[in-house]
Image 1 (cartoon, rainbow, N blue to C red):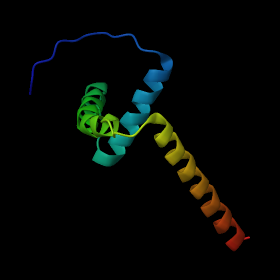
Image 2: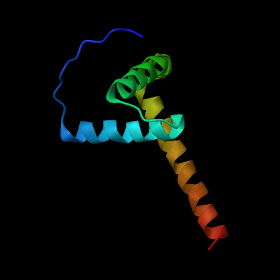
Image 3: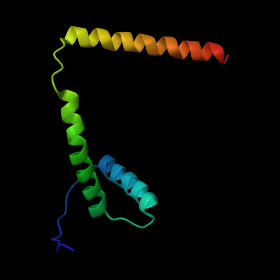
Length: 91
C-alpha cells in the first residue's frame, strides 16, 4: 500500500453530502466500510473510464446544428406519441 500524506481540503456541504451518498452506495456494494480516500479514488477511476464515452459523444458528426435539433425534436415527438399510446392502452 502506498504511504499517504494527510491533507485537509475544504468542500461545500452539498459536496460532502454527495460524497457520503457515494460512500453509502460503495459500502453496500462492497459489504464493508469505505473512507473518503476510497470514495475519491472510485470517482476518479470512474471519470477516467467515462472519458472515452464523452469523447465519442462530442466527436463531430458532420451534421449541422439545425439537423441535430430537428432530429432531437422528432425523437421527442415520437417519445410523446409512444407515451400517449401507452397511457391510452392502460387507462
